[in-house]
Structures are given as structure tokens and as C-alpha cells.
Image 1 (cartoon, rainbow, N blue to C red):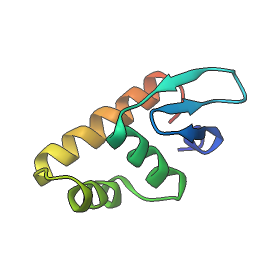
Image 2: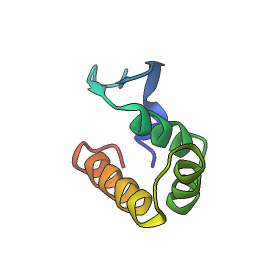
Image 3: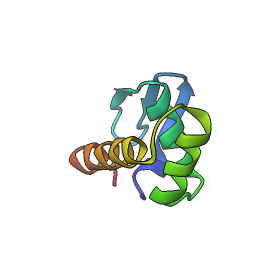
Length: 78
């Protein structure tokens, strides 16, 4: 996840890439996923974090993290 480490998260809902100047809008859970990935959490650890903070099933959390990770790859951030 080398690309997520370069992102600044100046406020909820915004992720900024100072290298490219790109700005991304993220929802609350997206911000939480990014912060967890920036601290080195694995995808399974992120799933556990989401389940602690949001009322979601393991399957929903796994799908959300997988979908978010796919989007990061599309953006060249993963």
C-alpha cells in the first residue's frame, strides 16, 4: 500500500495526494480504511476495525474493504 502512505487526510471526507495534486472524496468508512492502511494494518485487520466501529457483518466489511482496495489499485494508490 505504498501509495496510501503519501496521502494526506486533512479533514474527514478528503484525501490529498501531494505528489500528484489529486484530491479524492471519501466517506467516513473510506477515511477509516485509509487511516488503518496508513498505519500498516492488513486487510483482515481493517475488516476487524470496521466491524468494531460500524454495525456490519464480516461479509459486508470484507466486501467493502475489497472494493475499496480495488478502487485504490485503479487510482494507482495500491
